[in-house]
Length: 237
Image (tube, rainbow, N blue to C red; front, side, top):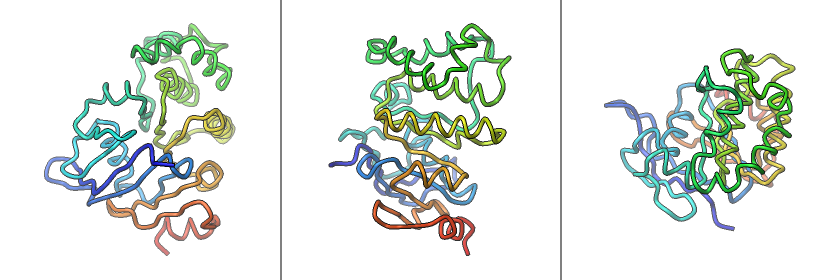
C-alpha cells in the first residue's frame, strides 16, 4: 500500500526564522499518524505547511501522488486533505447548521452533503440538539465538535486534527476522544497532534516524535512502545 501523503525534505518557517529543517514523514500507509513532542518544536508548522496555510521554503509535499506544495488551502481542501487547526476558528454568529453547510462548499463535497450531515450528527448528537443555535453561545467542547463536523462535511480523504482536546474538561474530552475514534473506524485516516499520550497510543498505529523541527523518532506498527517510554521521549529523558 502506498502512502496517501508523503512529505520529503520539508523546510519551512516564518520570515527569516526556519522551524522545520528537512523534515520527512508519510501518512496513510500504516494507519493513523500521531505526532507528539515538546511545544514549539514544529508540529503545528508542519500541519500548516501540509494544508497550504504556510508556503514551504524547500522540499516536497505529495498527496495522492500530486505535488501540492504550491497549492492554495482552498484547492487542498477540495482535493480531500482537510485540516482542523488548534483552537476552533468559526464564525461566531452563524448557526451550527450554517457552519456545516459551509463545510460542503466544494462540488465533490456537495454531492455527499446529506450523507455527511447525518454522519456528523450521529457522531456528535449534541449538534443535532442545538442545530439552530449560534456558535458564540456554545461551550468550548461544543465548538470543537462543530469544527470537526464542518471538516467532515468537506468529505475528507485524510483528516488532520491539531490538539483537538486541548483545554477541555475531562468529561467533554472523553466524549471528543470517543468521537475521533468513531471517525477513524468510519474509514477516514487521521493525522493527529495530541498531548494526551494515552489517547494518541489508542488512536494511532504510526507515531512520529517531532523535535527541533525534525523527526527524532518514528514508531511503526509492530514496534511496541508503552506510555512510560513515550513520556520519556516527550520530555527528553
